[in-house]
Length: 58
Image (cartoon, rainbow, N blue to C red; front, side):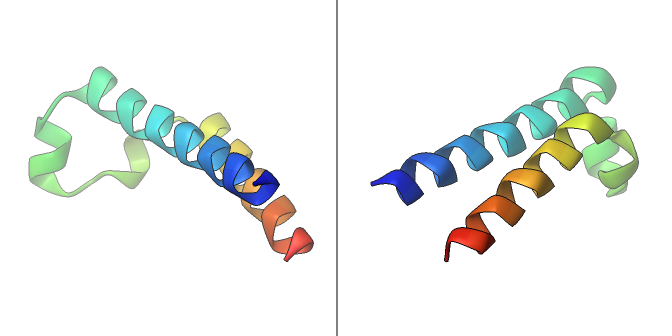
């Protein structure tokens, strides 16, 4: 159960990153395929840290 909650936490962070991309730059960025440069870097780093924590617990 703990792992499931932590995975959900990571997915929520990733969703926020996706939302920030679409909110700030609209669907034009999706059409161009330039997703990475539009993500909120802080959210990406936060997601990476949470994923690293999950990997340590495995």
